[in-house]
Image (cartoon, rainbow, N blue to C red):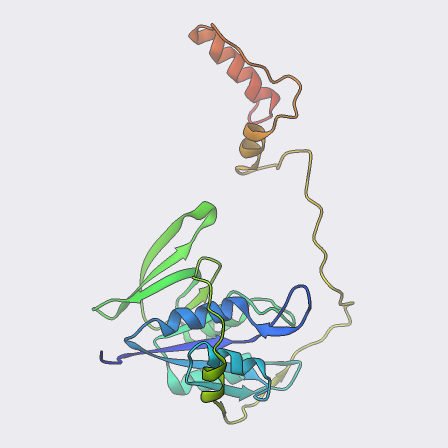
Length: 259
């Protein structure tokens, strides 16, 4: 098959949520695995950071031939270095994860790149395919298991989300066979580091009682909550009586008020 498309996958160093050890970033590895399945495209893996980090070898173990590393010092913004390299290569598709697992983890990198080049951006992508007319068919993950299909012109930036297929385990043989190439050093911007206290995030307690103020929360909570002592089963009611009981129940559940 003729290689006619170019995909750049931006990868970062992940962090295990329990052990806090460095690892493959989950969404970045899914983005790379998804890109490698596109037989008509040439895949480039790009990282902004330290070329000697051992986790980069694990990305090679997923099947990439090489990882291009733009040298970026710690606590420096990698966006400028990534953009400088992307200007030279100008890929058809730029794939990233939703956000990094370490550092500020703002999730702004794909948006800043898309803004700089004027590319469209689609988030939470689960799959994409190149069409014969040069456009891209993109499937995005929506809430409650729904999917959305969009047709977009390339070049485009895609952020890969939870709906993409899980990645396989890295191959040790492939990780030793691939190459890590160090790119030219670009001017870097030092990240402003405000004097904020930094600590590990803690899970917030779940709400046990009470309803949300808007949206579908009140309906869902009311339909499936059985904590109200006024719940009862009615039988042998005519249409008007059943309507009165239902309206009274909806009013008690505060789904809407009956004047």
